[in-house]
Image 1 (cartoon, one colour):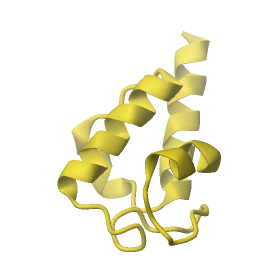
Image 2: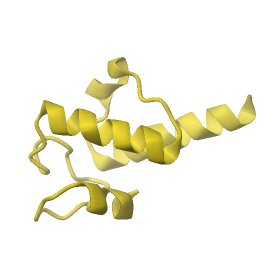
Image 3: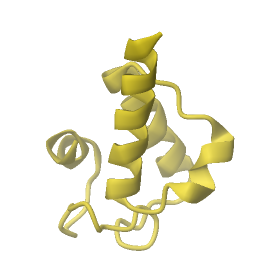
Length: 75
């Protein structure tokens, strides 16, 4: 996840699990949406808009993707 994000986000800030997506990476709403679409394509998941308020950090985002993929694998 971190390696993928490093290739997607142009920032000098370090990218780690505790990195806050908007505050630390300086992403505006359009850049955040583009990032989420890239993540959906790359990891073959759907990230609903109502989940966004809970996805504050890179770790939150990674955990959400892991949960989504494991739930899909069980069905």
